[in-house]
Length: 202
Image (cartoon, rainbow, N blue to C red; front, top):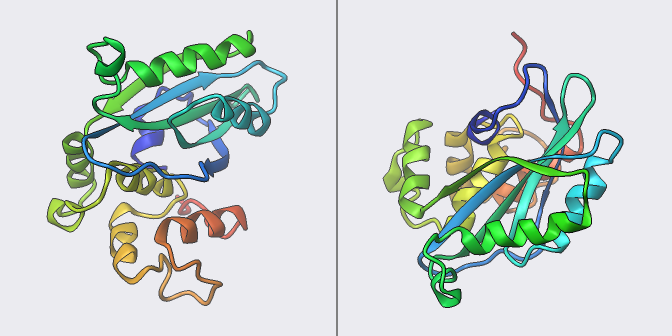
């Protein structure tokens, strides 16, 4: 499933059922990324609740949702914020504005709770890419939102090196006849939504 899926403590047999991105991508320098694994209420709809949470987050970037083997829904919500946004409100932790945003959003869903969370600087994301077999020199001009979207796209069963290569030619699947979106991330998400991307057979 990729780095993001493996970062969180999912039960064996958990599966992703949906993926989404925010309409706007935040660009700039000195940004940080943040991801939180949310356990939703047993009878809640992952797509509906993830959309609701995202609508209440000022730094919302996207995420993915799914179900545990027993059918219990969950979501992983991604955020990107300026690295200095915490200092502007007197906080030391650079991830605090995103942590606080989720805390406020969860007030509207008493059945949901944060299970795990993780933050990354740009340098840390570059290290993640290196660990996935990508030469950091090939992505050193990517913004934090770009790096995070690459990891999100990897959750759709597309190897990260292929995503990086596709960014150059603006196509994730150059050897496949498809309606290309001319953006590697959008291309991957569109193919996944259409049901064309599946895990490799064991």
